[in-house]
Image 1 (cartoon, rainbow, N blue to C red):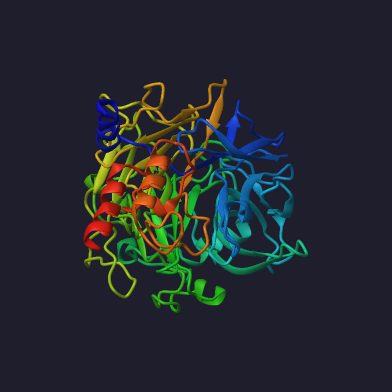
Image 2: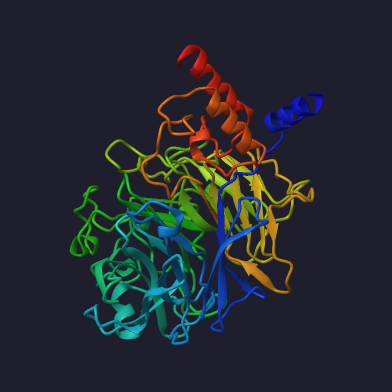
Length: 508
């Protein structure tokens, strides 16, 4: 009896990792490049492999599991961005192709973005790199470089180019046909349509004061040709996320130390303009944050991002920060040798636009939440990629790419220990191994229509029989059942039993 009481006490008061599905694709010594790799779906503690998918090419960033109309994990699809052997532009995060697999590992669709695309009317070369974002309808948002030669980039006011070529940024929306293998490009956005410069007065995008146009990008920020890897990469966009409620896209630029939000409700024609869409701003920036000096506002104290990756919206249903933004900052401006994970609150207004005062930078002026790779915390600093995601129970999942290590913190930033009492969740112990980003999915993410919460035996009543079943789940005698997670924190423990008892005794 005493041991059981201790067990229940431990369930309540110890830190707990989020018991979801952990997914990642290792690179480096864990498998990278054109030669191949494997995607792993593991248990929430990282100890057990639930499923794996083999690939003939290494990862460009992270894989995604897509929930189909058919309920069940086994009916999900794997979306995998990877490195093509046909790349025409090569730099950090280079990819070139996207593949879709079913649960059994059958390749259903593959599309190469490395060269000229028949679906796009101009004759420029394109190259997918880094990230993708599967949309709820199954379409895919893709980050791509668009190669511009002097005959074109000179018309946009670029003046700080060392090697004569600009790899500009394009966002393409692909519509894959899994039956025919065909692909349609249904939406396009180009940064070259949203530039403002004060160098060449004869061009249409000239403005005397860059600071008058925070919604536009100055093409003469940074010297093109001076970056690492491929020197023609101008912005180095490395992450993309989508908010279905807002119909907006967010992007992260490593070279600019900024994130950008654009309107996805536009047509392709509107996306090339400065009007239209829900925002009536076309494809201009609705919001940008991280380094307002890029648009001539603020000062060094407003410089809050550095080389960041993995920008994403926190799910609105998560109590801890729902609707806020979170990202992995590779070089914290106040301590460039160390990384951090930061959460911040964008100044979203009711109409879907973002508040900004005349002459001032977009807020906020500080982080809402931060955990740093300093002091007593593990040093999760990575020079390449890296990830941060808020989990349904309020924990935060952190990926240190360089050391192939995955961490998890609680709401207060305390690092949760694994079963071996180490301050990380999972690590690949292979030379030069990397994990660009890992993610966890909720156990009930892939389920169909749920039953009655607390009714584990599905008899239409909540009673003592259900309490016994919950205890069995806690003790590991039966498998996880999301109907036992009464407080929706991702863990099943004595707190859920108490809530069921309250329903039985008081019908509330």
